[in-house]
Amino acid sequence: MPRTRAPRARLAVLGSAAQRSASASYSSRTRNALTRRAVMGVLVLLSLALITVYFRESTGGPLHRTQGVGASILRPFEVGVERIARPFRDVYGYFHGLAVARSQNAHLRSDLERYRQLYIQNATALHDNVQLRQMLNYEQGPSFPADYRPVNTRVIAGPPSQFEQQIVVAAGSNQGIARYDPVVTPAGLVGDVTKVFSNVARVTLLTDDQSAVGAMNLRGASGLVRHGASPGGTLILDQVTKDQVVYRGDRVLTQGSLAGGLPSIYPRGIPIGTVTHVGQSDVGLYKDIQLKPFVDFTSLESAIVLVPKVRSAQLP
Amino acid sequence: MVADAVKAGAILFVAALVQVTVLNRLRIFGGGPDLLLLALVGVSLLRGSVFGAAGGFCAGLVVDTADLGTLGLTSLVLTVAGYWIGRYGETTGRDRVHAPFVSVAVVTVLASFGELLLHFMIGDQVSARLVLLDALFPSILLNLALTAPVYALCRRLLRPPELAELATEVRLLG
Image 1 (tube, rainbow over the protein chains, first blue to last red):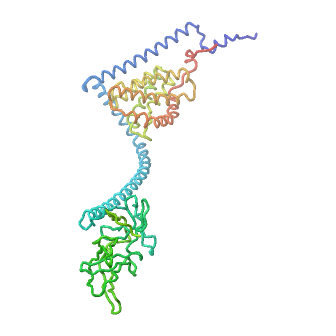
Image 2 (image 1 turned 90 degrees about the vertical axis):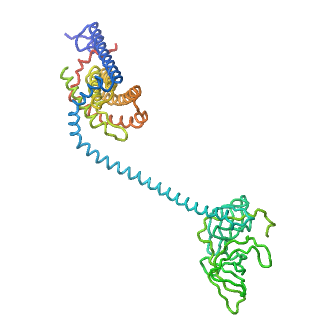
Image 3 (image 1 turned 180 degrees about the vertical axis):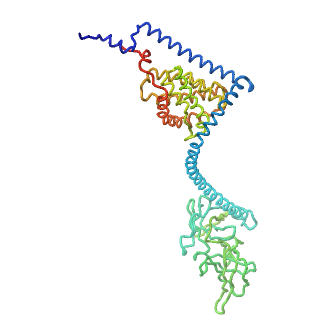
C-alpha cells in the first residue's frame, strides 16, 4: 500500500537524522552552546590572566621560570625541525640570493648613476668656484678699473664660426650693459659689447677682424692690437713705428686712448697679451709684432662686463 | 574524540614549531606565511569551535614559550581566531569549498590587528606601518597560496564529521 508523505514529515527528516523530539533537540543545542561559550570564556580569561601575570611579574617569577623550562623542553624539537628544514632553507636562500642580487645590482646601478651625476655637479661647482673666485679677486684687486662696476655673466654661446669671432653673454640692458662696454676676464681683455638685448648681449672678441684696441707696452711703445692672420687666436700689435722699443716677452696692455688723444672705449691698463715675435723689414713703416693673448678665447665660460659708473655720451 | 584531539594537537604542535623555527625568519615581499594559522583554520573548520579555541590556546602557548614572548598573548589571539573559524565552519561555512580561503584571509587580517593591538597595549615597540601596510598584503597572499595544501593535509588527517553529527546545528525553514 503506497504511503503518502505530508510536507511536515519531509521537513522533519531534513531537521535531524535521528528521530528526536523538539524539546530534546532544543536543550541539546542550548547545552552545546553553553559549553562552547564556557570553554571560550575560560580560555580567553586564562590567556588574559597569563598576559597580566607574565607582564607584572619579575623575570624570575613562576611564569617566566615555567616558560624557561618549556623552552628547554621545546629546544630539541626546534633543533630537529631546523635540521630538517635547513636543506630547503638553503635552496630558498640560494634562489632568494639570486633574486636579491639582481635587484641589488639594479639598485647599485641607479646609485652609481646618481653619484656620477653628483660628481659631475660637484666638479662643475668646483670649477665655477675657482672661476668666480678669480673674478672676485680681480674685481677686488688694484688692477680693476676704478670708474667701472663689474657685471659678472656666463657665456651662453661661443663663436658660431671661425669667421665670426663673437660670443653671447647672459646679461643685457637690464643689468646696465650698453653697446661698446668692454668685456674682460681676470686674465685680460676679451672684447666689447656690440649688440644688447634686455637679458643677453653679443660680445665681439679681440680676435674678430672688426676689433682694434689702442695698446702699449710698459716701455712706452704704443700701437693698435688687431686680429692676426695666422690661426689659433693670435693677435698683432700694429702701427708701432720702428723707433719704439718692443721686446719679445713684453706685456701689452690697453692704452686707454687712441691716436690723437681720443678716448678709447677700453680703460687703461687691462692686460691683452705677451709679445711672442718682434721683427721689422726695410720697406715696412712699422714693426711686425705678434702677441699671444692672455685670454683663451676658445674656452670662455664666464666674463665680466665693465659698466661705467658714469656713462658718457654714447658713441654712434 | 581523544584520537582527534591527539591528531589535532600533533598538527598544531608541528605547525607551531615549523612556524617558530623556520617560517618566522622567512620574508617574501615583506610578508611571511603563517603555517600555524593555516593549520588552525584546518582543525577548526573540520572539528568545530571548541576544538579551534582549545587548539589555538595550546598552540599559542607553544609559540610564546618557544620564542620567549609574552605568555598568553599569542594564545589569546589564536583562541579567538580558532573559535571564530570553528563557528564559521559549523554554520555558514559548512561544506563550502571557499570556506578555508575566506577564513584564512579574514583571520590573517584580524590576527594581525589583534596582535598589533595587544603588543601596543602592553607597551611593546611595534610599527603599525610595517605590520598593516608592508607585511599584511603579502602575508594574505602567501597564506592563501598555502591554504589548499595545508587544508587538504588536515582533512586527510582529521576525517570530516558526518552530516548526522552536525545536523542538530542546522536551523530549518518552514
